[in-house]
Length: 297
Image (cartoon, rainbow, N blue to C red; front, side, top):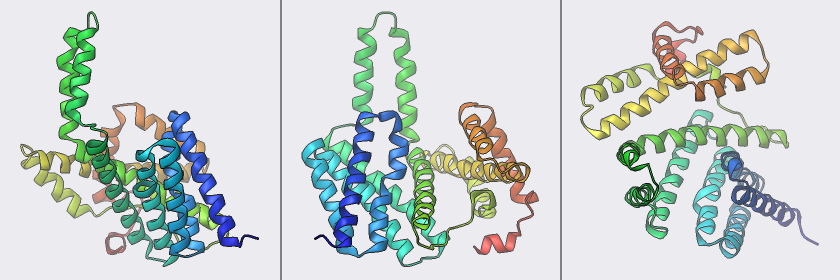
C-alpha cells in the first residue's frame, strides 16, 4: 500500500502531465496553463517536505524529457518546478505576504531568464535568427517586399525593449501565480494569509515618480527607456486598482471586472488614460488610503 505522500505525489505528477498536454495540443490555453502549472508542486511542498517536492519535480521533468523532449524536461525544472517550490516554501514558512509576493515575482523573472538562455543556446532562437527568417519569408512572398523594413523595424524595437517586456511579464505572471496558488491551497484546507486585493494596492509614489522623471531625462540610454516602460506599467497598475475599487463599490459581479480588463487590453486609447489616473491617484488618493500606512507596507 502506498502512503499518503506517495499518493498525493502521483496525483500531482498526473496533474502536471495533463497541463503539459494541454499546453502542447491546445496552445491557445498556454497562458492559463502557465498560471496553473506551479500549483501542484506548491501544494506538495506545503503538505510534505523537500524530498516529496523534489520527487514530483524530478519525475515530472523526466517524463517530459522522455516523451516531449529535453526542453520540456528543463521547463519542468526551472519553470513551473522552481516557481511552485518557491511559492510553496513561502507559504509553508508563512513569510509576510508582501514579501512573499515580491519574491514570487522575482522567481518568475529568474525562471524566465533561464528559459530564455535555454532557448538561445539550445534551440538557437534569438532575434537575429527571427529577423533572418522573416526576411526570407517576405522575399519569397509576392507583393510584400515593401513590408520588409516595417516588420524588421518592429522586431528590432521589440529587441530593444525586451528587458522591459520580460519584467512586465514577470510582474503579471508572478502576481497571478501568487494569488491563484494562495486561493487554491486555502480552498483545500490551509489557512495562509494573502496580500491585499489589487483594488487596495498603493504603490510607492516617490520612487516611481522620481524614476519616471529620471528615465525621461536620460531617455537616450536604452536602459532608462526600459526602466521608463516598467515604471509606467506600475502606474498603470495603480490606475487599474483605482478602477477596480470603484467597480467593486458599484457592483460585486466579477464579470464586470473581467469585461473591463479585456476592454483595457484591446482598446489602445484606454491605457494612457488609466496611467494618467494612476499618476493623479498617487497625490490625491481617490480611495482614501493612508499614505503612511501604505508606504510602510
